[in-house]
Length: 586
Image (tube, rainbow, N blue to C red; front, side, top):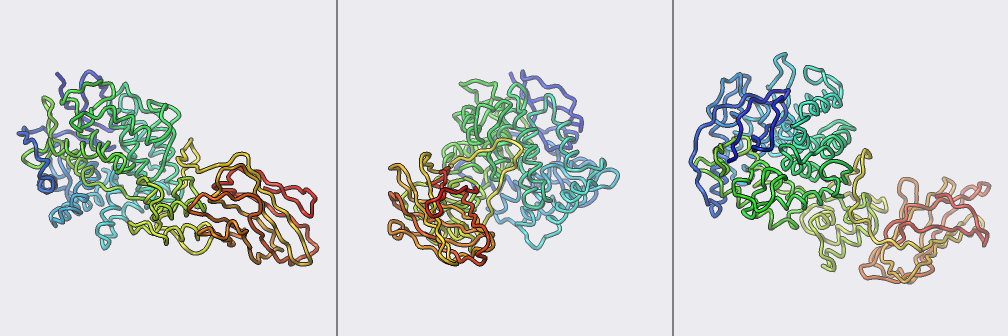
């Protein structure tokens, strides 16, 4: 018979667990003494009353808040009664607050908003004994989100920005004092050995916070730490392996990053989507996720774990709520099936007790909605190309069935509907004209191997040639493509031109004239050109001619061709100037 162990958590985390018993729920870095649990009666089968259940779940968080001595309120850990005001845990406000805030967006209950503000008030007065501002890893993003929900309450976002991220950047955070590098090392030391699987849990929303309000370079450093020091060190033979893997997937997906782990328990997977799909093997038929990947089916109902299920649910919703729709519904149903009469949640294994922080994490998972990245990078190759605009237009025409990320990337303006205007804006961004998608493309850090999920169509044996002629002060570049019989329906390339050439115009061939979009424009001093069709087109031979005015007839004429994208990606280039082969600068 499994029993949930009660333990004392300290900053050093010196307890040595064994997988013979299941572990406690965990709280963010900077633990506190556990409170004596009370007993509760389980009330099953509340799934048909979801929104009533949500109301009661949020009420439970508010009802258990504890007055803190410096101001605001926290929660007891793991459950009531409240400790003395000076001992209210300061590291549980992030998860509990995220649940209460997300719940508020559905209930619109002012008490839930006020409870969230109480968490925020405690967060901005919580300090080390020496008086320095003190944050748990989940607090900065919560404070940003609190301001996002209440834009007039700028004090919360600003406090997280200045007292955490700027202080880390200045090397003045905490009692160290700490830089970001030394702070991450502190977390790594605390979450080591038998606790190593908790490293991704610490970064699950800190990474998103760094993107939103961090200092330059902090997002990349935290992302690299999350990949290399957290996800690549996951160990399925230790506690919290399911929680750690799910939290790692959530953190990466939440920040719109992908990753191909090179080490650790999930090195066999080549993306975070792959990790999540592998984790589905440990989803109980009832919908909950089990507490350890060392368990083998058939799973017992007692194997399901609320905190692991909450983070798996967050991960699936952040990754692709369309693809994982059935698994999401099952997980949500299981969570509501263990809701108890007081509004909280208690698992069904012998000795299970409620945990108020995990109640908040469960509400967060239940009400979390993926924040789509409307960045225009539909083919997910980290740049805007004609193919992105083409795919956006084809999604509008319903010629292709898009997944969740493709659809939202194609929805460049973020209004929830893919339209020709979205395709046009993506196209204009490629050409360098003043149109911007709602979100920028997130460039992954270079610290480790990352994934390009949809590199696009590539014709490996094609050749682009450029015949250059000069007549007086006019230079003409005739572009030709030599290819196999594969269709070319989108292409792009860049001509880097010297300052003594002025772009004049472009004339496309008859085979491209009927394409929906084609054109050229100056972007960062270079000529960017391309086009796309919504039907496959067999373009072979002459593409078009670009004309330049030559302002200095005494200079050597050198043109550099590069950035070949979409259907002419990886083509080689020959340049002939009046039938004489010249060197190509790429």
